[in-house]
Amino acid sequence: MATFEEYFKLGGSSAKICCDNQGALYKSKELRQRIPMGASQVDIKHMLRNMNMKLKVTFVYEWVQYYQD
Image (cartoon, rainbow, N blue to C red; front, side, top):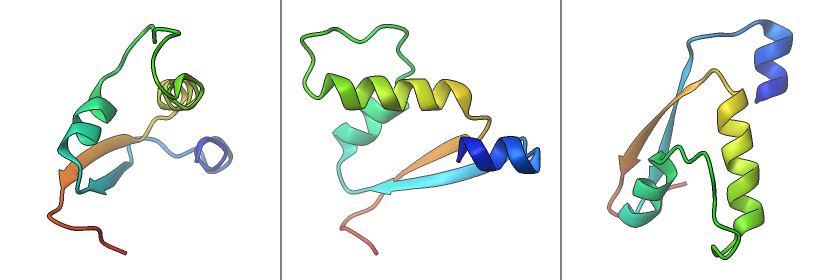
């Protein structure tokens, strides 16, 4: 996504993230500066944090009752 934003000079766009797990949505909204090394799946959380800091897109988080395709 960062490549598309840079190549096409996109800015101010938004994307919706839907999930049936309210806890995961809550954690996804957090913008942490530091992730503790003892945290579970720390490598994935570091990658997601770094990507969120580089992206210009605004994410909208929505809880859904069940999985959707």
